[in-house]
Length: 307
Image (cartoon, rainbow, N blue to C red; front, side, top):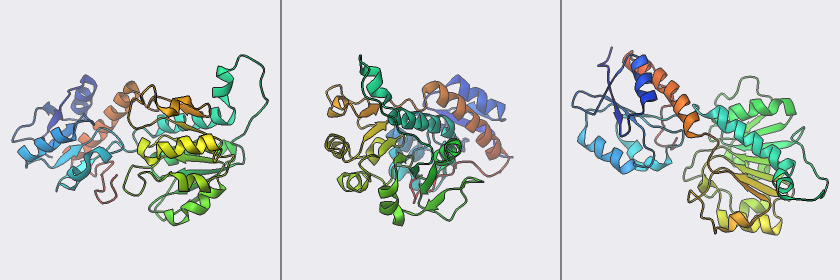
């Protein structure tokens, strides 16, 4: 069994201290004896780099969120990094489903109106749904869509790797992205932000989509070119969109996206602080226990893939 000292930096949330202790670890600041580090601040990659530079003895770093794009070159350090991928799949998939239903039933329009208005509705039942990204969120969302009999296609980097058990849809590679995008009624972004996916949805992509299609983004803001999205929604290239992520965040009050009636924006609330704290605590219990017993860690980051 390894030394049970686990550093918790830079913020020592009591829930995380309890989780580490429950797993058999002892919470400490970084010392020459510390080999494991739980990093709790997504917004401070530079500070993490300083800690790593000063502590070459560190062997494992647990990062706080599923996305690790903020850490960039740090991930190429010769140590093990784990992220929280798959920790937040349930609430994020739930939010994606809610946004799909809200768009299909024009809930944003109905909330604003003060008159009877038009009678309109779309449905998820038996519709073509494209999920971009094939991780835990995609698996959870596919399960949620099963009762709707949605015809789900998942686009992912490694289409031949195992996906959700019992999944009746299709898993394809990005080679098929254009063809599948053109077919889908609902397009849901659940991918990591990488050089491949950055601004993947631009004027070209919107031009491929059905004019009656809906876009839902619960991934990263930069997967979508926001200027191109505004143009697509104004011009009718797509019917409507919903996003839980933007760039920057918060989105300025005078931004053009706020002026669109066919765009629903939620303020990065697919997972809230309370949800993250509860679910990340569970990931710490699992991984600290595994680390101390030389067992495989959950959520190991592939530096080449970027997630």
